Picture 1 (cartoon, rainbow, N blue to C red):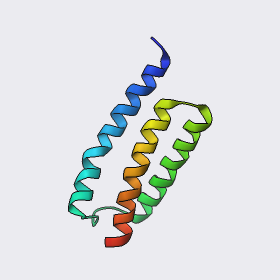
Picture 2: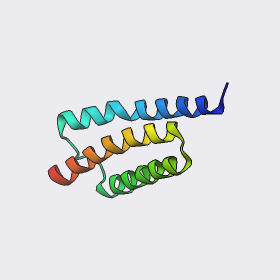
Picture 3: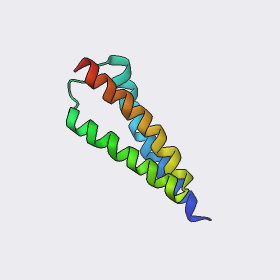
Picture 4: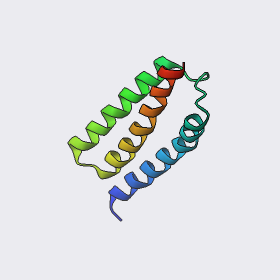
Amino acid sequence: MSIEWLGYGAAILTTLAFVPQAIKTIRSRDTSGISLAMYIVFTTGIGFWFLYGLALGSWPMILANITTLLLAAVILGLKIRHG
């Protein structure tokens, strides 16, 4: 078994763990419990992980981080828009 599968497993689990909270926040538009500073840092960090995955050519990192980056960016946008 390739070590790449370990990366895919980690990518799937960490991305899936984030999805329910993202869906709840997107549906409710309630961002009152979210720190703006934390989401700015988090979204920037995910963007860096995505770029790092691109530089390495690591598909598990690329796929997981582009998915999480898109969700985090939507939530960050909601936080900025709705407070």
